[in-house]
Image 1 (tube, rainbow, N blue to C red):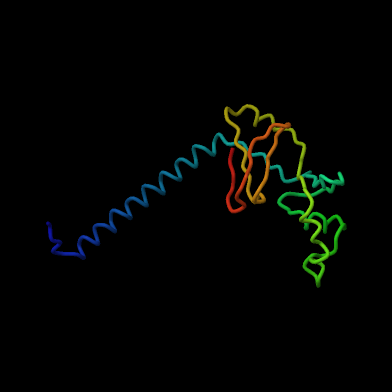
Image 2 (cartoon, rainbow, N blue to C red; image 1 turned 180 degrees about the horizontal axis):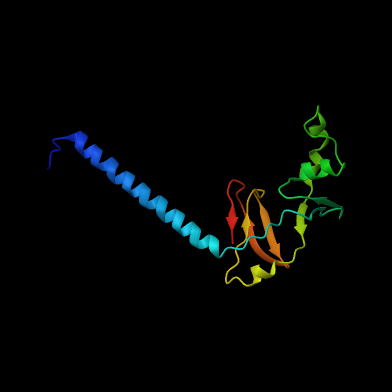
Length: 148
């Protein structure tokens, strides 16, 4: 069994190798970012959304990111849920099914891409994502982002 005579020199060598790895890794990350950024086309879908109460069919315009209480408050349907005891009067909201939807046309440059990726962040725990009536994704975790 080998015995380490000079622990501090071994420790120093490990730190040198670790620093070299970090420099190489940082260079690799910067290089791959530059390559992918040249061919990347982004189209944000944060505007022109609608929140629908599936039970009543009521529509409320909104922007994303949002959540049901904020959208209803901004559309003057409910009082401020954070004021006084208003929250107790708003429990009915959780008993309803709410759907967010938007209609959009993809940018022409987006259609020229060989691969299109959709990114979702801040989704509720359980969501179903549809595009043109086709189910794309069902989520089960509010603490992560989703890419398809």
